Amino acid sequence: CLSKRRKESLSTLLIKNALVLATMDDNRQEISGGGLLIRDGFIESVGKTSDLPAEADEILDLSGCVVLPGLINTHHHFYQTLTRAIPGAQNSNLFNWLKTLYPIWGRMTPEDIYISTQTAMAELALSGCTTASDHLYLFPNGSKLDDEIEGARQVGLRFHASRGSMSLGESKGGLPPDSVVDSEEHILEDCVRVVEKYHDPKPGSMLQIVFAPCSPFSVSTELMRESAKLARHYGVHLHTHLAETEDEEAFTLEKFGLRPVDYMASVDWLGNDVWFAHSVHVSPEDIQVYKKYGCGVAHCPSSNMRLGSGFAPLMEYLREGIHVGLGVDGSASNDGSHMLAEVRQALLMARLRAGLMGASLSGENAPKLITAREVLEIATRGGAAVLGRKDIGSLEPGKCGDFIAVNMNRLRYTGSLTDPLSALVFCNPGWVDFNYVQGKAIVKNGELMTVNVPDLVQRHNKAAAGLVRNY
Ligand code: ZN
Image 1: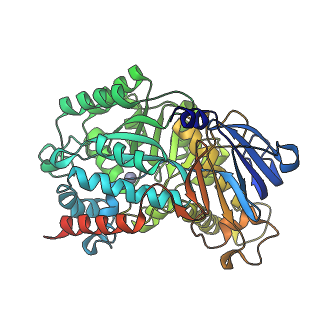
Image 2: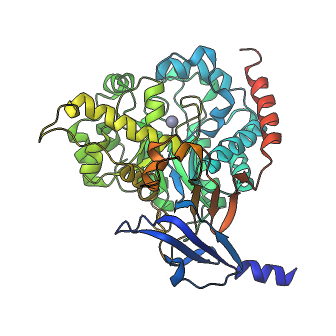
Image 3: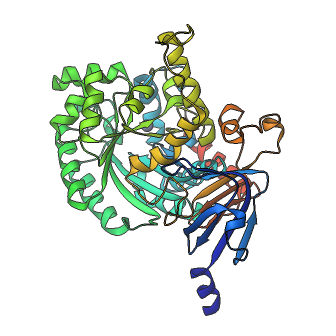
């Protein structure tokens, strides 16, 4: 037992012969026949296979595979995998969609949160995600953030758990019914409890806590302010939904006399420790505010299209150097947790927007089309910057051993091997073949190693049926 433990803690993993290894380092180095040496979970060297040591405790030959840093998901609501494609919420905009779903979500149990976390994370892992953030903002029937933390631990992805909250029920002028909101005193107490119990800020951290009041229309001004104070006291990040729809802007104008970004300024929610989901309806001045304060954005193209919310100004964000990560968003508004698919959606949505701005007419002033490499950067380096992580997002010495590999000898990639990295985005996405987190296999040869998927599907469908039984 002791020798096994010693071997695990000092183990080396050699990745070799990648068709191409995209490092996403500052020079965006791409290495044909590339490899990695990972020691004790961290990358020791990156280079051509011939320049790396020949021996290691574990050797993985990735001939025919594209290797890249693990993708980082910056916005999700795992529990919504229980309510995908609910008929009454299929054709609604955000506010009506929420009003249909709040009462169903209000029936969730701790077990439902645990199971749905595993389902969402299994799908994320198989689609190339190695670090996921989740925003859990309602805790019915005794549920706790601990339920999803436990579920996540089993799957093995790096996890940023956002302790969300809703305190502004209908009776106080908010959108959610009173039955799903909590008292502000309890919310803040529980934030303190989870951050002290779980938050690990060290390099290689597998679990960090985030404070995340749900949205301007579901929490009070006081709770926004107090959450910001508490987050800064503990040095953790802040996250919320912002500028997602025009309904939201109408709400903040009516209730606070401010547009959403100005409202954030008024509650001390600007800084490089803050990231906002969506940020679709922002003005050029708002973008300058994000730039000045270093605020990050979780871009969620599928959800924004699914709910008819609009286009986020992705190219403007990139041009201004705003930190942008990618988010699949909750599985009731996507309705999938497929990271590689979201990368592709980000490319297509940005190009559609460019088309609406004149890209179909050739000429000097035609808007630029986003590239496959740019959207992959958003999903890797961008996500790391948004979450405030310096130890992930690229394959470089000293960084975490988080990588994915896709075998390109597949029907869907046939004929694309002149540029296999771009093919990952342009061709239809599937599951990845390998997904390693901190040098440990989560997906190997296309199989999830940590959770039994057929069993999970059964348990999940049973839990989902229980929730919508009286719907
Ligand atoms: Zn969301």
